[in-house]
Amino acid sequence: MATQRLDKFLATQGGLTRSAAKQAIRAGQALVDGDPARDPAQKIDPLIQEIILDGAQVVYREFLYLMLHKPAGVLTATTDRTRQTVLDLVPPPLRRPGLSPVGRLDRDTTGLLLLTDDGDFAHRLISPKSGVEKCYLATVDADLDASQPARFAAGVTLADGTRCRPSRLEIVSPRLARITVCEGKYHQIKRMLGAVGYGVDALHRIRVGGLELPPDLAPGSCRLLTEKDRKNAEKPGFYEF
Ligand code: URA
Image 1 (cartoon, protein in one colour):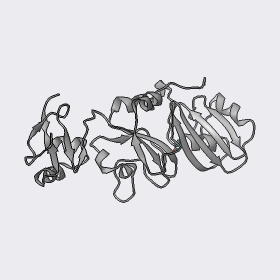
Image 2: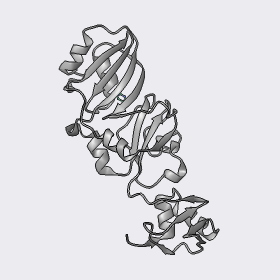
Image 3: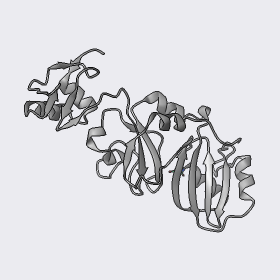
Image 4: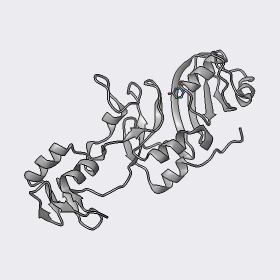
């Protein structure tokens, strides 16, 4: 790998701004192969040298892949002037330029949200052509009737005439549905349920492709995806739509 400036490396891989990286280096907080660095312009090769910042190793990753358990009340955006965004929930050492949510969940929707700076990966998950399933638990405001699964299987037509692709609705309990779609139209689940006469009291995403929200990932927490998680997320649908 080509060498690069230490301050640039810490800014792209260590979650610091460029000026914070410079300051940290000048303050002796960064070690290169065990020796304190003092010059922000020092050239390093991240693949062969060990870089430590504040006692923790900064590992080179070409792309970053994270899963977040999105809590309610947080905006799916990278910045906002006043409101908390999903990026605010990413621990600072994992923040880097270009890190963005894959698709979006409404502010009141909870559950599995992926974030990455790998645009191709994000595109493959979002594109309706890939047919990656997104599965939600929806709590509705009236008892579900037994005709709904067939209506979803036929493809719901939204109030504005937009036709959705066939999807799957399973009645879990009278007011709880598990809904699986393989596209991502704006407010899709709420609009599909609205079109068949239900309001949504709560919406929670439990799966993207073959990747499920881990039960031990608390709301507001995030973690790195393993390679297996990444492959699972891209798995084509389980269901025949
Ligand atoms: N569909 C919705 O209506 N809202 C979401 O947040 C996700 C899917």
